[in-house]
Length: 347
Image (tube, rainbow, N blue to C red; front, side):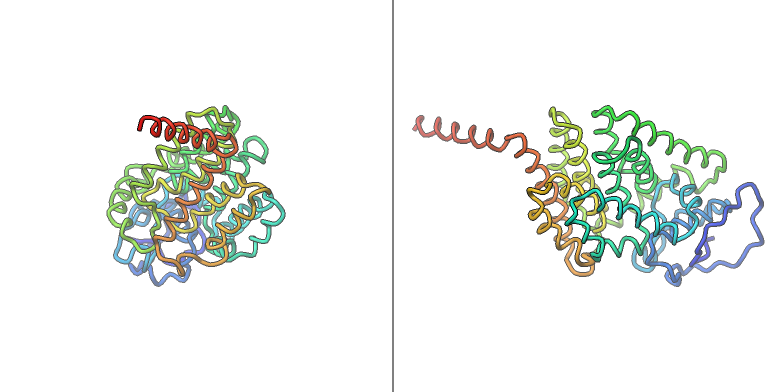
């Protein structure tokens, strides 16, 4: 049994028996809202509210091509039910875009009219909320980054990595807000348990998805050897006595490079980290690097290798900016000169 395609609004029926069964079709591609990322969340939330286990995590032919499945952790179900409509998702996404750009230098606000901004708002994607969380962590009130991070964790799970720099930086208010928000979403799942909305069901679906997505033509995940380098670099960053701001932003830039599945719009968080680290002095460098991402819908224009190279390159530039600010590059060059001098004298 599958959910009704084109469901525009998730109606909460918790605590009430489901209405008379309506014949359901098994052709998700017919959904007029396939292109909206909010739509599969709303359909799955409606299935959860009606205790329809089969309508939550579905793996069918044409996945990501003929139809978009619900892939988020079960925590996203009560969150989607609260928002309740595609329009609400679009408004929340627009708020994330506006907040991100409002905290950047004035020249960056032109990006509001870039195709990348208009596309994510139309689709109702959650990634701008993660970029807003990154910005709020260095320029927002206490607790806001934690709240936005909780939304990102509910939608993607893997942004929980950003809790590490929060803990190292002793940002207890953000951690508390994030934890309370996630616990509230989990409490909703406990209050209305549905077999198909469990963590076990999500993990089983994710394992099956992992066999498919590495070869999908929209996946721009960074190749494993380069992702391993990013991971090792991030561990080194977190061990160094850097300021919270630097650890926080570098973790944000590293996050999409460590994923086995990464879409082009994940670059929102990479771009935000680069813009904040570049600052006014290096704004032109950041702008030049971000042009391919912002002023076209990249997945329709570039091959996948451009996508993973852009994500990896963004992290490398961010790491270079932090190293330069601590004069680590000068120290490295000095050690290299000394090594070459010793080698020459030995000859």
